[in-house]
Length: 143
Image 1 (cartoon, one colour):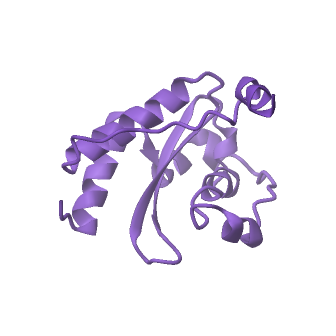
Image 2: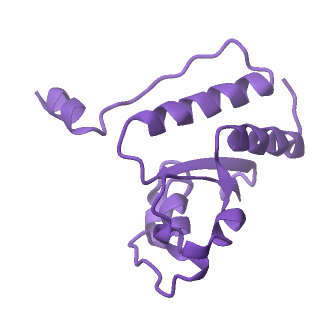
């Protein structure tokens, strides 16, 4: 399916907002962020972004939370950012979830990705999940 970058981003933001994600600009207007006087330090350096498997897109979530003072929001934090992929120049959307300790965050990410794929015409798709990041899966993998 052939889709323009503008149309893709319109559909992606619509899907994100349907599932409760908000733009960073919208979140920065919340009193918790506006009244925050202290940035949260982080160690996501330019070198870490270069080493990132997704060309810096993975570390951008941490940078955004810290630099935009979103760390002051105590409720579940679902946001999206629209980026330009550094190496290809293509438009991309990143979905981020913070302040959620349960696996519902992953389920929401899967749902928004599935909905977006359907919205742009990819109805026959599959999702592969790598669950080695949690403690139980890591122990099983090492064994």
